[in-house]
Image: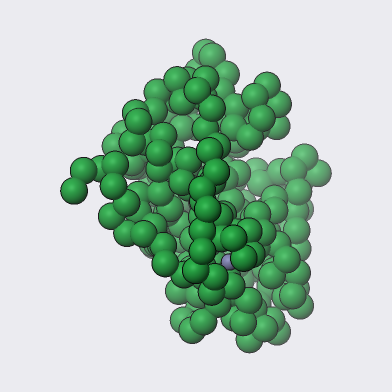
Length: 235
Ligand SMILES: [Zn+2]
C-alpha cells in the first residue's frame, strides 16, 4: 500500500454515529507550495480539514478529538451521549473553539471557552490545577512559544488531567519554524492565522519539554487524523 492510501478509514462519526461523509477541498495551491507539500501530503491534509460528517458537520479533526475523549474516559457510544454522563465530573477548558465540538462541551457543568486574542495560551488567566481536561484544536502551530503554551496548559490542569489537541502534522519530516516568508492557514494574509511552526514527526517532544510525562496518539483515519493526548502526572 502506498502512502497515498488511507491505511485506516473512518466508518462511523464518533460525535453522532453518522456513517456518511463528504470531502471538501481546503488546501489552495499557494499554501501547498509554501508548505512544500507532496501530492499525497496535500491529500491527507485536505482530508484532515475537509472531510465532514454529513449529519453533524464535524470535520475529521473534530471527530478525532471526540474519539480521543471517548478513549481516555473509557466511554462507549458517541460523544453526544458521553458528555451527558461526564457532565458533573469534569471541568473543561476549551482554548479557541474546537470546531463543532463546542456545542457538546457547552453541556458540561464547568465549561470555559477561552478565545484568542482575549486569552492567549501562553498566559492563561486561570488558577493552578483547575481543569480535568484542556482541549485545543489547530492552535499551537500559530503560537510564538508553543512550549510556554503547553507549560501553561500543564499548570492549569489537575494532577492526572489530560490535554487533548490537534495540529497539522506532516509525518515524514521534522518540525520547523517558519522563517522568512509568512504562511497562513484559514485565510491568506490574516495575521491571526499566521503559521509559526510547521509540525512534523517530533511534535510529541514539546509535551515532554512542557512537563507532561506521557504522550498518546490516537487516529480514526490514518494518516489524515491524529489526536495528541498529554497526561499530567498524578503526583
Ligand atoms: Zn457526526
